Image (cartoon, rainbow, N blue to C red; front, side, top):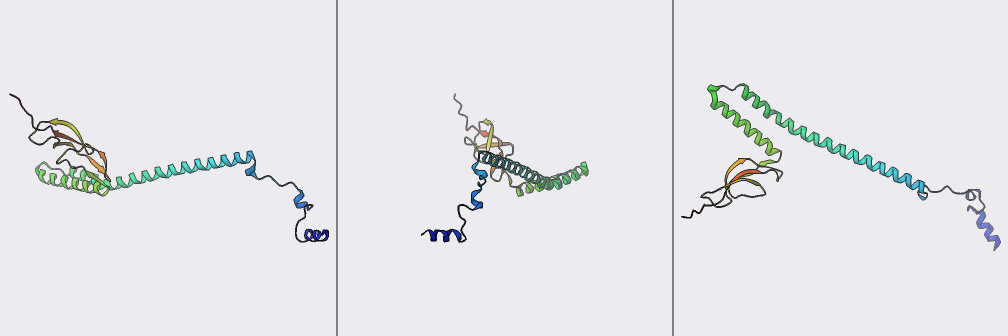
Amino acid sequence: MAEKKEKIDSKENISPQSPLLSETPLPDPLQTVDGLKDLLLRTQANFENYRKQSQKRLEELQQMAARDVLVQLLPVIDNLELALKNANPSHLEDFVKGVTLISNQFTALLGDLGVHRIPTEGKFDPFLHEAIMKAPSDKPENTILEEFQRGFTLNGKVIRHAKVKVSAGTENKKK
């Protein structure tokens, strides 16, 4: 049997006495405390760099979005300046038509950007309207009587509530 053992050891197997195995192996960096600390610090630094890069990209996207909106607003401003420059008291009707066209252009631009006016006809809705005052009226209670300031939504979410005057209902007078 000893003969068989020698043959096994001599064949392409490395024996326990081989110089390759007799040297002490290098420790795995993940098995030492210093190696783990180093790995943790690198991972933390990489995450911090990633967070900073993500924040910078987000800021750049916000700036580009603002830039795009401003570029779309510039023609409206140009038209208003042109209307004011060419205003003539004797052609007041033409001036009003021009300003109305500019207002319509601006409203269409806002609609393209997802901004829409909040309707103020009908019943008061506290999610869309802000009641500035209540007044007695022939109309049923909580009916909108007057709009003081328009409200707007952006992609279906309120960005400014409509400021309105609301009916308090009919006033019962006792004699």
